[in-house]
Image 1 (cartoon, one colour):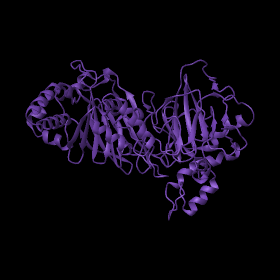
Image 2: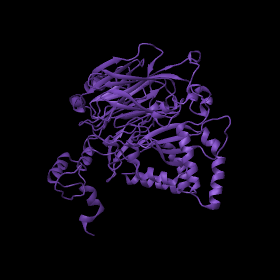
Image 3: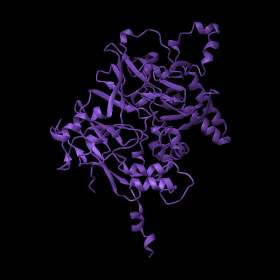
Image 4: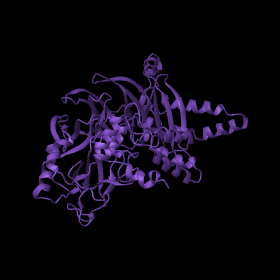
Length: 555
């Protein structure tokens, strides 16, 4: 056997030496030893193996605030004050600013109970070494109105950030006149709030514009009820069942259109010229709104395309499901492109509707022509295939540093094979898998991290514990191992929460014997640094994971 073609030689031929990678990039040699005329973006992938965040600093001493996320360019860290009245921005100074202080620390973990020596100095000063307060503004002055700390959206140019505040409305203060756009509004089960959105300029913290949505319910958790594409922002009103389209121009909110009761904004002006319209009380209007009526027309015309006996059967099915369609409500939406919206209708609790036949509808709506393009049921296998093979178009997020999208079934073979195994494991294949996978769409805007240290084409790790999706997860008592995808060699470990390194067991100093804790991650867009925030009882423990040249990773 030729030793140069053996598997052992190929494993040893992979170099994590930074000097070797710089030489290969200068010569135009890629990771598979092919020569190119010019370096490609794939050259930067291997560089992240040389600079992993191999040091965990537990229970960092910092200001009492809620950390939200980094700006898309990685220059600022966005935070909310503890009382949720103020909004703060910290300038990120870079991981190299703390190299001198961290270099003498050789271990992979700085324990939380280290109150003397170098460990205590690191825990006490690491925040000030990495971050500097840029500005802080107070947006609310009453305890009734609070900032929603789980909502924040950056504009596409990265110059502004959109945040929101909400104030509960007491039932006795509600006006007697509402615009009810659907029969389902008679059975609304949520409390109403007065919402206010702020457009804040990142450079100086100035509030350039505000817009309000009174007496409404908008689901803001994890950017759920708001989506953005280019200069268009869409706010979904669950109470009024309307889609509010706003244009963002030079830091200003401009109301463009409202889809719901009327399919187009000009329809209301036309209806006002009808004499009967002025005497019509909208409170008593319990019929379908304009958008729902368009969906019903589209479904009925689709039924008429069938032939003979099949047509009769489908017409009967349409009328049998008609009361289900009427009871469905808009739940969530997202942009597919600047001209098309993917809207999801859900069947919520309704006193007159009890069925297990249909619970969701996925509608593609054209904003330019104001027409329904497609309506799919919750078991549509073709929509499932679109989501599996074109997942990057649904997420619509890319790194401004590498130009790469987060790992998904569109760009990663391992994720695609895993999803195909899940699909094939169901008795009826795609039909049953659609019930399982399609409820996760539409996707929330800006909810995926573009950190290169989560790239599954480069690193191998437990995706159940950490992933590009920015959602809290349950912490584990064991550190998360990050291995090289090609050689399976350990690159670094990530210790979660308060950990006893010597006993290799979870060591909770704040609440012994407590339940499983939730942990959230905040990843920097490109530097070897990210933050984990762990909730233990009523307290939040912040851990830093950073690159340290002096740390020795024991394999």
